[in-house]
Image (tube, rainbow, N blue to C red; front, side, top):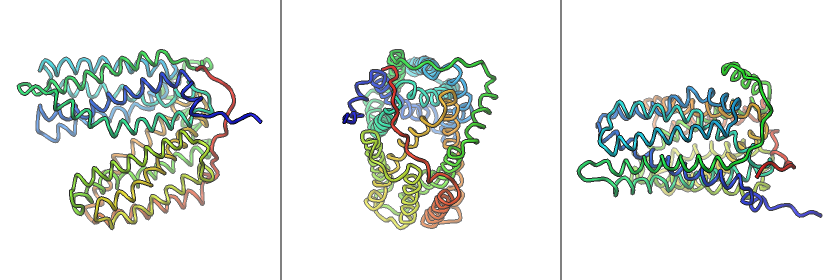
Length: 426
């Protein structure tokens, strides 16, 4: 009997994965410096919170508006090429931001324009990055690769802001107050240069030649294809509902709970979010390094985890200490991280390669587009409900969505992808 190959060993022996992981991690770490330094820069220029909100909106709005266009172009011109170009574009934009900040020539109009351009570039890089992995590693390694990459990203999200904060504060010139910010932007720019070079070392499978198609026609084609696939359609609609009823309470009600009820306030919120992040990191690592550890079908696992999330929300309204919230969020984060890797890998294997960029962009558009709506709805609800009532209402809605998904859709029948043979470049 031929022994089952160790996915961890095969994964790290794959040269494409090593190049993708190295450059991707460096770029993600650089992003953390900019995410912290940009709001700090705005606050050094003006103390107006409306200006800060406008800058942050300019960074996210073009991504939501143009991400479907980015997916269409990734499918037309190859994810690797689109991703490579966006890395160089980001390096140039951040290099200009570095120079302006270091010389003291930075002004709010420059901040507005550069933030808008960086957000626009991300609309093209996000779908390209999601579509490149199936072209770079064998199909059997997609889930282990996603698990390692997402777990590493989660670790960067936990540690990156701390490192960025130390750099910004230790590197600041007492007279100008901006040298540390310039260092932060400069390191992010350098990370894009290095990750563009590592990406050039990746060898992907060549897609079939496709005739040029108008962008909006290509987007409509992908939407029709996703709608005709019953399991894909059900999963997209299901996650749209889940994102709405989970995203709002996490973004709005959790901070309100910490401020109103928990000793320590912001510190308690930080502890709970950190514990949730550590749980997600553990779940992603397990899903990637132990892809054969499964709970029933993939669809059944998704429904089970969201049922547990609903029960956690019911309990969360009665939390009065940070440790209680941490106890609830740790296993929830682990299960959520496990499912996230599995679902993402299923999508990459389910969707036709020629439409992967557009279809993944559609999935991200649904989730990201609903996030501000969910936050606004939760904020409005808190004007008439207290925190306990909001968590209870969200839990009941979440459980209703799970029940509808289990009873009236094919989600529960979605299977884990089967191991596939064949070797791609690596």
